[in-house]
Length: 231
Image 1: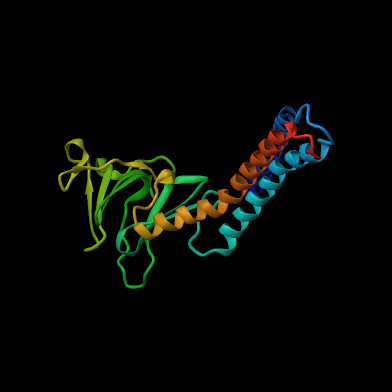
Image 2: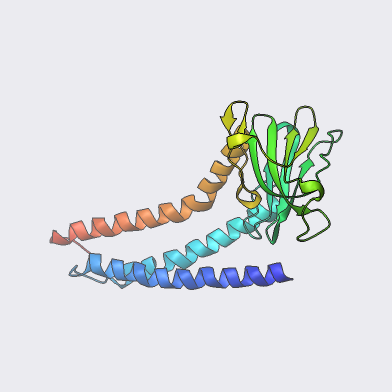
């Protein structure tokens, strides 16, 4: 219920922002076409329609990605499922990211017996390094025994719990940067490619429409000096 309410408010804010940008687009069109012969209204109106049309497209694309494309990024509620090496996945809810956990995508793969939720995570080859947020069945109680970190080998399914990480966080001779679970992005090449394709589909059409419209305005402005220029 709260997710739906949040989505409604976010959508309302998106279209409110698009209305403000529409005014800016209309102003830009008026400034570029100022002094041009003929009617400028059609071009100003067209410019004002681009931001709300782009917002509608973004909302439509977010719905498609979230509900109809398996494995795609959840662009509505912010829940995350980021692939880890060897068939494991970091999963979590946007409203409770400190309850993130590591799951196996494939039957037969051993589930890591983590002692709590994952607050931060990093990857070094097949090894996943993470920091516990709290016990799995608690909102704020720390993991017993002063355990704060874990190292999970996705190849062997071995899990090691630690009170402290090695100096400078170095593993295999390289420092590993731990990031918040909700900000973590998969290092898997296929996932990086999928994310880039999603971004092109998601942002490409609005960006192209805007660039095409601005190029058209500049072309009309350039033709203003021609005695045969028409609206």
